[in-house]
Image (cartoon, rainbow, N blue to C red):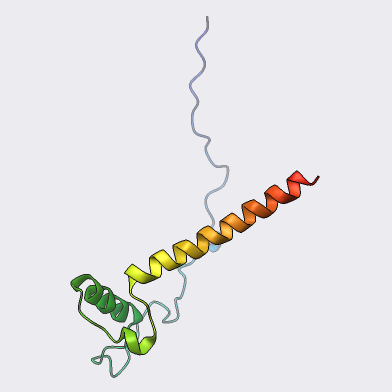
Length: 102
């Protein structure tokens, strides 16, 4: 079985032309970062407010929930669980009635 010939890289016919070489790009100052003048004051962050609220919930500290009209979880979860169960019972019962009368 003959061995395949070794491939040699092709030699370019012409020397590279400098006018076709890629030129360095001028960024035009786009790579610079400009900082606001009064950057020492922190901007209000909704993520920090949420984190503080979650930490208060974990510690069990009382909040202004009564003023907001929010239910505590031990009341809200069973209520919405019951509402969900009633909706699913209505959907399944309605489908059963429709299938029974077909």
